[in-house]
Image (cartoon, rainbow, N blue to C red; front, side, top):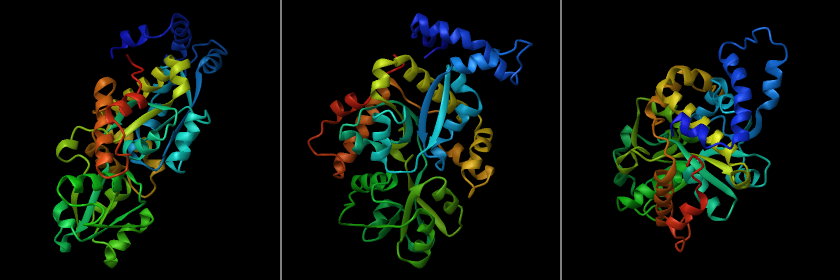
Length: 344
């Protein structure tokens, strides 16, 4: 959406409010200069719309979130965002959003879709990027493709993880039954490499940054990832907004969505700078590693509108194929129900 179109989408009152804060946002971009007008910055801060955004601070997927804060994209769109680092279960996160304890969240589509099927009042408004999930095996295992996993054991960080769901789907698509032809074993993410080293598993699957840092070991081979074949242009990380916020204050939902989309595009164009901003959240990886991770992701791919709705339906079909979603769920109707085109 063009900037002019975006501004026109707001009500007159909302546009006036944003005009009143535009000067302060510009001052912030110039280092916070107030040009001798006392109290202007404080007044502008009070005018910003407060919002709570939940995210997993340890996942490189969410790099656009601190980028949006650091680079002023939230302020640009009239928002004062409180970031909440959420590491609990997805059900708890979506309940927190649906009940107003948080206003929105960023997470993985393949973890969110099943809970959303249960009826949480959360609307997906945009995709953030693709990439970040990988499946590794030792070079000595002889496993070079998904078919080579038949009869083997795969280590995952939990049995409902996006990586487990994704590779179960892709195994199914190449004729390997993910329930009967392979075995899944759960370990804490930091112990996946040790399980592989001990031979307790023959492959491991997880997300960046954990899996990327292991990938750099010469004795490991990247068998597959979530940018292969038909997934090359599919999103994996999504933005969800409280349903009541979308219905009652669409302009704020729109502003948040637009801010994160702009931050995502900035991340794609400035991966080294984005990595440096995110680095304090990933003590186990250095900026060079984080930069390489971001370059491997598809932050230029952040669908909205009908394109995004179709990707939700696509993943719903995938999850039905491996028994994660109910067989009777209509994927197209489901996608329409959990999606909102707030930028239209």
